[in-house]
Amino acid sequence: MSSPLSRIRLAVQPISAEVFAPYGRLLQPRAHPVQRDFTDAGLECDGRPTLNVIWQPPEGLRFTRLERHSALTQGFVHLQGGPAVICVAAATDPSPESIPDPHALRAFRVEPGMAWLFHRHTWHALDRYVPGPEACTFLIINSDPNPTQIVDYATGVSELHADLGNDSAPRRIDHAAGQGIEFEIDSTGL
Image (cartoon, rainbow, N blue to C red; front, side):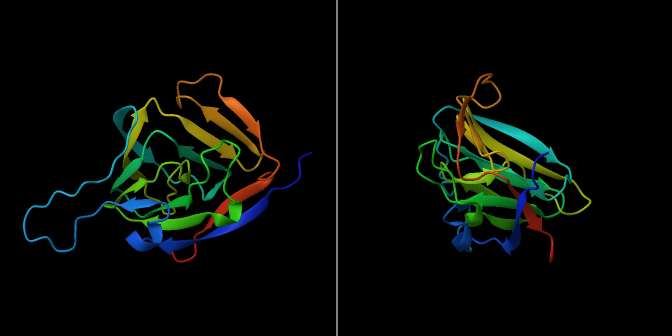
């Protein structure tokens, strides 16, 4: 019989460019442009950029896995639905043995119409969490191939994928730290 998971509760914070800066960049126009204005989004991609649409239904507010991408500054646009929550931890050393302190994870509320890029190697939950009854739709900017590391804090095991979704034999790493942990988004105030 397995022992129960230790739960870390994440308070949801409002998002702003300043508080999100350690994790990535909010994509928004410069303040009050007087004419049409192109702003470089800062996308970095080592492979072929891909664009996908994700439909995310409400599926609960608990998770155990984080991922990071080394080949791009992964991007999202919250297209429609209600508010959602993204969970992030700052980038760690690119070494596969380096995973974030689970207490360093932060949760941010994102609204429809918002867009963001994660810095390379920024850790984030695999899903966007939908606290309300309404599903959300997101546009995601990815890379092909998509080298990705996923760590499961319940088991303490990382998988290193040379190309997420197409790698049938990812390399596994056992982490002494990060075992027996579950994250839960605190829905108070959402």
